Structures are given as C-alpha cells and as structure tokens.
Image (cartoon, rainbow, N blue to C red; front, side, top):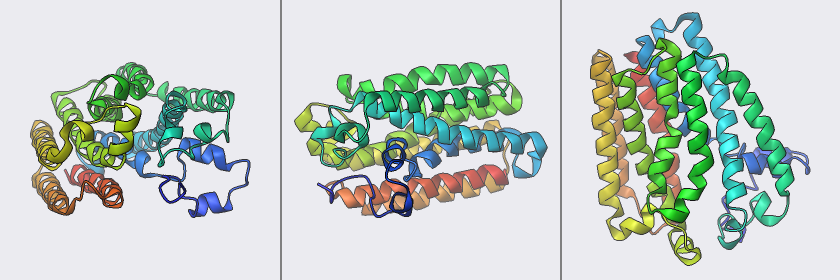
Length: 302
C-alpha cells in the first residue's frame, strides 16, 4: 500500500514534524506544493499582465502578489480538506489515497471541519482587502470549490469543473489591479481552463483503473487510448487563448516569444507521456508547475 500512496512519507516536512501535526499536514497537502503553484500561476499571470509587466507593479501590485500568494496557499489547503471530506469513504478504496488522514482514521470529521473553518476565515480576511469586483468573484469561486468533489460522481468531465475552479485567480487578479474583468482576463481564464484540462487529465490516468472499479468518472476514463490526442488539443487551445490575452492587453514581443516557447517546449515533453505508467504521469503532471512559471515570466516581461 505504501508504495502506491500519494503521501511522501520520506519528505523532509513529514519526517521532522511532530507526530500530532503530521495528519494535518497531509490533510492540507502542505508537503506537496505543486497544487499551490498550479492555483497561483493564473493569479500571477493576470496581475502581471494587467499591470503591464513586472516593472510596472509598484507598491500596490507587489502587495497583490503577496496577498494572492498567501490566499492561494490557504484556498488550496481548504480545497484539499473539502475534497477529503467528500471522498473520505472513496479514498479508502483506492491504493493511492487510502492513507489520507480521514480515510485512514488518523483524523476525524470534526478535526477536518475545524481546520476548514480556520482556513476559510483567514481567506476571508484576505479577500476583504481586495476591490469589490474581486471580492464578488472570490465568493463565487467558493461555490465551485465546494461542488468540485461531487463532479466525478455525476460527469466524465470533472477536470473541466476543476478548470473553472482553479483558474478564478485569472479573473480575480485582473480585478484586483483594474477593478474590473476585461476581455484579456477572460481569455486568460479560458487558457487556464484548457491548461487544467490537460494536466489534470494526465494526473487522472494514475487512477484510471481504480476509478472504474469504484464507479467514479474522469476524462481519463472517457478518453481511454485517445487521451494523448485530447491532451495535445487542450494545450493547443490553451496556447491560442493565452496569446489572445496578450493581444488584448497589447503585450510586447517578449510576452509572445516566452509564452509560445514555453508551450512548444511542453508539448514536446508530451511526446514522452506514457498514459499506462503512473510514475510517468505524475512526473509529467508536476512539470506543469515549471511550465506555469515560464508563462508568468512571459507576463512579467510584457
């Protein structure tokens, strides 16, 4: 079981944390920062692009970078807790997730609810410092966060709903800078949705067999052997909308050169994807956090 788990027991954080704290670290996935970065990059894209690049951020822009960084950490942690509350009975039936704290009994439901309440309270404090449009978008995003874990029970497209959920930062970041949502922000949001469809489909191939056995759905199950074709298409569509966002924001050559280069490099990496190899799927999935970083550099260069 431990060989297949997604919990890295050998990680430095879990290895040195007190025994009582380890289940909470695992519940919030603090030891696994990939998810935080995937949530954070669309926030950075929009803040940087709306400001006209890193050189134009000034004090307020850097304050937004700091607030969105902390907010992404808190909301990703909250999302993980919500997900584990929804899935506490399903997780025990899947080798990769059976040792998660609620599924294994290391924590009880009341512990998870207390952690969730604290995370949401801290997130609300940050949210209330933003402009009104960003606040309203943040409240709306909570509905998506709460409902996302149910999607794999009712549709083969939970990855699409995750895209809607995980990329709200592209809208909120723009609203934080300009006080409104522009066409460029909408294109960034759509680019992020297609990006999420790509990387979460890759991730979903790890659980394809277990998901089929326990009766939950995913794009990995829907696409089957055609998965690579779909994923190439998702990244291609993401590139198209990312470039459109740059055009609408009147970005310069640096933006287009870095963003197109990043996409072409990652699509080359896709040539080595092995959908039936869980370790390969996880490795390629994790490479998306570096891919998102290069797109942030493109927005910073403007």
